[in-house]
Image: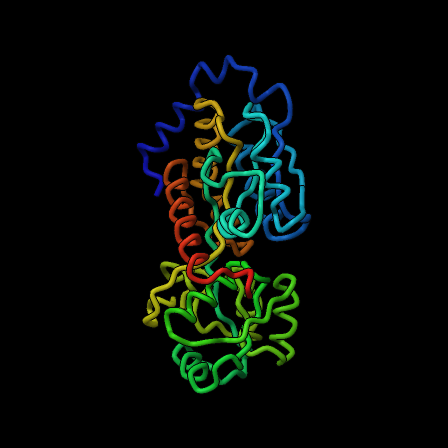
Length: 320
């Protein structure tokens, strides 16, 4: 939570003479790398967030650049290997950032980024059609034990946060589901609505609109607490399954950003996310906000890295 002390300290950083005297950030645009295609969730979030951050840095100019490819790897690498001069940072996500170095060779080290701020934690959820017989997670467990490897769970692909939640749920419940990997959430939704898929695994923010229209139901979401966007839906933990999973989406720069520049970014993000306008826009866009600034964000990502490495050792997901 952003306290008055935090905000006063942040204001002091922005007003510090050393930043005011420096060429940064006024002499050229700051590139914000989105490692995914235009109009997707990460792109939409970034353009929204940067519009608010820019108000806290009136001398800065921001340019959002989409560098899609290899599931985000190309954008992560461009960010990580950029000059640490304050003119490049980008969107990073917990699952892809930590999973890719386990699956293949990459040109970045997840823990060495200069962490600025997390903005969103979008919990993964299990969804069913409106007329599904599954009313809760216990129903799913009971059915999976009666008929192992027959209940399809659609995800955005092998190694996605949806897939990792499914595997962790199987381990916790001693069940085996049938993984159905798709190329993204849209085809998962298509088959769920069409009655061809029993369970859809995707994020709360992705299913919220159809949920409010009554076209799909959510039998459990894996955040630490209930999301205000659908407060009547219990968490996995509330139903007796100790799992937290989701898509954390935040911002980091290349290793070695100068401390004053890094603090300038952190301060601007903290101030932006503390405004009523930001919170109202986040609700309108269906973004489950979880602000974490600086070291708090770095610690969260380090813990996520450890969890994913442990799961990989037990059950490498490239095997499906």
